[in-house]
Image (cartoon, rainbow, N blue to C red; front, side, top):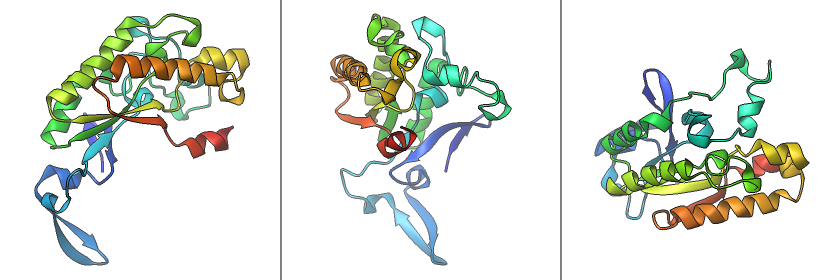
Amino acid sequence: MEVTRSGRLCFFPLFVAIFLVGSSLSQISINGDEQKIQRSQFREPFFFGTSTCSYQIEGGYTEDGKGRSNWDVFTYISGKIQNNENGDVANDNYHRYLEDIEIMQSLRVNAYRISISWTRILPKGRFGNVNPKGIEFYNKIIDNLLLRGIEPFVTIFHADMSQIPENRYGGWLNHLIQEDFVHFATICFKEFGDGVKRWITNKEPSLLVECI
């Protein structure tokens, strides 16, 4: 199931289908039999939540010092993406994150799995400075989630990375990428670790292996 805003995809289900969250009592069909499910049937610490990917929702791809990611570059190659679409605006979460968090709160979710845009934090990868505007953006999201009782789950790498290591040595095809990743992860732990207690290293690592 998906939540949409003006017809655009905003959230993906995390852990369980979101229709279990919207009400205290729902009905689903299993093998043709209607069964009632109550939220109270799921014991603590069961999480009902949503999940997103930074490139797929944020937009604001050149705002406040953000650098170009591999996806920013790839989607501009003619014929690579259907209808030559890209994530320059996406769901405009960069400007509407508070609205998105309010939607989650209205659905009574208690977890939100997000990913952090590598180039919003490090516009030039480990070859440049940390972008304070990027740090500020994610801290605002984390603070507002916690304020509403929604626990942030953070994925460090979810397919988008700086284009610079791609150009210099082939990104994940070269062992030097380990230095880039450790540098990025260390900054994330330092800047967001006070509010984030649950981390995911890499979204779908098996898919990354297949790509390599």
